[in-house]
Amino acid sequence: MNKFLYSICAAILACCMAHGQTTAYTTPVGYVTTECKANSDTIVGVPLRQSAAFAGTITVNPNINNPSGFALLSLSGTPNLSVNAFVNTHYVKFTITSPTPAAGDGQWFIITANTADTITVDLNGGTINAVAGAGIEVIKFWTLGELFDPAVSTTIATTTGNAIVSSTSPNAFGRRTTLLIPNYLGTGINLSSAYSYYILDSAKQWRTQGDATTNMGSFVLWPDSYFIIRHASSVTASTRYTVSGQVELGDFHIQLNTLNSGAQDNFIALPRPVDLTLASLNLGGTDAFMLSESTNAFGRRDQLFVFDNSAVGINKSSSATYFYHGGMWKKAGDGNVNHNNDVISAGAGIRIRKYQTNTGTASWDEKSPY
Image (tube, rainbow, N blue to C red; front, top):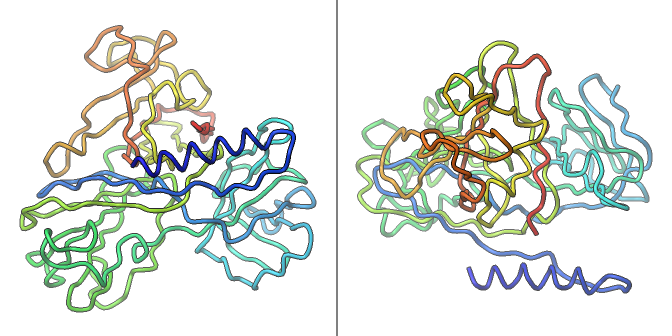
């Protein structure tokens, strides 16, 4: 990690030196490693991204009627993109920092079509805030096969080439490590997983439950959502989940779903390769996180759950529950103690449970910590 921290510091220093002059520097890269305990769930996301496949600006305000629910982005210059090269495999992220960060900075949307000089994105029920002149980056989603190469996975935890222990058969008794995808689009709380994947050792490919023949290595993982690495009881040693990639230096916009009646769970993993305090999240005290009326259970509104990846267990309960009250983060069962400096580990997943509201989806502008 020292090499990684040095690369961040060097890049930030280069940014500072660039003030008033032209200085070239490389976006920092690094790695984050998490231990995945035997016979246990490890709740993680993707704290580092892939490098941008394209960067540019949009020439006019996005056309959000092309068609309804989508937005057409016209690009400046002559980008000469390969037609439909980014469909469902890449996302657009907006950068609006001149003269200061503005509404729309950090928003991201899935690409559904592209021509040589336009990109169409799915708004997914959200609202696009970017305007003419906004910068964009086109970034590839991580896939199962890229994060966890089946070719180097083995059926033995101590020899596997990544966090995943290959399964000896598609049957339940032959499963070793399963990667579970939460039900991101589900309604309510305590939702069951939507998808379950494993590496079939004999094929050296990713498979999904109920389909033992289709290669699922191209399944994409969202940059702001967590997944669960589950080692079965047949996995008797820990593995290591390591992500190597580029640091997301800018702000990041996260959509938090809500319901008109009843609470709604959101499965979040921040795209940051460093530990973050609750106070640094730019969440408590903002419109994205409803204030609690008291420290009692009945008075709590929005809640943030964290999980302990160092603890052993399947279907683990959260290790701490936080809410925002009286201008500070507080912890369930700990009275009025200020927990602003409690830490969320790099790459760890959290669950945000939104209290019912009729105001619609909440927008969380997660600020860059660098």
